[in-house]
Amino acid sequence: MSLLSVRDLSTEFKSGDRWLEAVSDVAFDLQRGEILGLVGESGCGKSTIAYSVMRLLAHNARIRSGQVWLGDVNLAALDEQVLQDLRGRQISMIFQDPATALDPLFTVGHQVFETLQEHLDLEPAAARKRALELLRQLGIPAAEQRLNAYPYQFSGGMSQRIALAIAIACQPQVLIADEPTTALDVTIQAQILQLIRRLLVDEGGAGVLLITHDLGVVAQVCDRVAVMYAGKIVESGDVHSIFSNPLHPYTQALLNSLPSKGIARGRLENIQGQVPGLADRPAGCRFHPRCPQAKAVCREQAPPLKQVSARQEVACVLYD
Amino acid sequence: MKAKMNLPSNPLAVTRKMYHASRSAFLGGAIILALLVMTATVSWYSPYSPEAMDFMAPLSAPTGAHLLGTDNFGRDILTRVLYGYQISLAVALGSVGFGLVVGVSLGLLAGYFGGVLDNFIMRPMDVLMAFPAIVLVVALTGFVGRDVTVMIMAVAVVYVPIFARVMRGSTLEVVNELFVEGARARGASHLRLMLRHILPNAIPPVLIQASILMGIAILLESALSFIGLGTQPPDPSLGLMLSEGRSFMQQAPWMVLVPGLAISLAVLGFNLLGNGLQELLNPASKSR
Image (tube, rainbow over all chains, first blue to last red):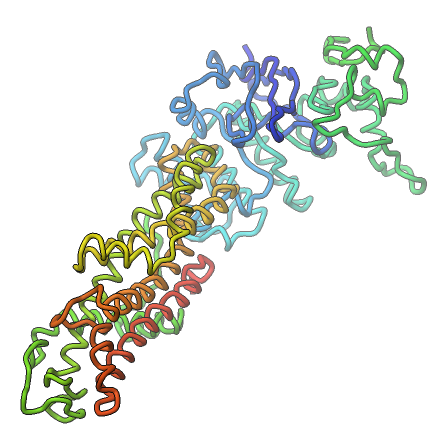
């Protein structure tokens, strides 16, 4: 059984007196011990999926339909009180901007500590010991002194390590990482990703949903990847297959637009047009206005995600 | 877990540290503290009672016996000012205390939950806010009676919407911070979020406001007593003393100068404190 199983999830936002769908009928599974990358351009609904799974949506957003199964519990329909207990203990999240993800008024030690006590019912001494151990595991130098420091005294990379320490303090089964390395420089980015891989996935057997727009990050750490466009998953599969044999025209275009080392000169490829806004998503396949291989049928028919090989699923009429 | 702060043990060093943290807060705090101590203990050390009349020395200029002179009944002005402070400070602390508790709770709820509850709380506050403060206080004391408690409640009613507004605005800002989301993501309840994470982060502007409103409360109390709606003679009150002294301004200017300066001093103290708090409540200054 999958660790986390999202079924037909649709989430919508209120705009004026209309509800606009940001995520449409998204389905995916996250297995134990794997990192699933969720990639796409800004505004395609990646983060909305993360917030829907955690049920941390803003006041003007709601899950319209679908289920989020964590084991045999449907988070989408769970009582808020019960959910509160699961958050941080079984399913946690880290965010893009580590500097603001920590409460400025408490020491970082206190914040690690608070989470441990809230969920694990530890003695203060044991919790302190565990907090220290976590900070050491995350490679924070002089952890003992750093416990008593305030968030503003930390650099971005250090803050993200602390945020990660808090997120994994209770050894959750699922970690949702919403662009965790976007605000960090490349070397720190690699370190954080390695930590996630080592501490959570390899040692803890947890599953990680990694949201990013950086294909380099995906290639570096993910096992599988789902590509999103305008609120839908257009292609998913294991990283190797997707990178070596992208099927969906959008995935192909996305990979083509990466700068490559081999070519010294020449213009970068880009995808014509831009992502349609929530209010004016086209009928049929949502990529058809920008698709170089669009046919007449693409304007009317929205293709479902279909298994095309053992390791790849794609939503495109070209593969019918 | 307690954050270890490197506090010096010697009291002089502590004072010096506080002075350097914020001169304004230190000075304001010192004025307020001195006033509080002096007025709270006045009955122990003052040789005069505030109502005792010395018919041998009416309108006496400051002398060794009467350090700040006497009024037209020969009452010691210093003693009356110190007793007058009791009422002023009681009104200031009482009204701000009440306004703070009620206003902050309402503002926090309105800002945190938003939507219908926000409107339900804030629209009545807007209505209350639309009344000019002094008129509202005059009306309330006029209806209910002239008494310190009534004065406190009247000023508090004026203050509740002010505190509610400031707190709501500040809450709205904090509630969207990522660390609140982060705390939610690690399983914090509404109550915990509000009390542990939002309240302490959102309260600084409210505390600054509170300090300034204390000064204004003293002015309001003086104004009410000045126009005859507050403290009644022969009780000592700064506003009342000003009002009584008016007729003797030519012969005994100290009768208006002393209570007037006394009011200014207290207001100055609270304003300095408010300014200083602004600097102090910035978390980045904690480690200094």
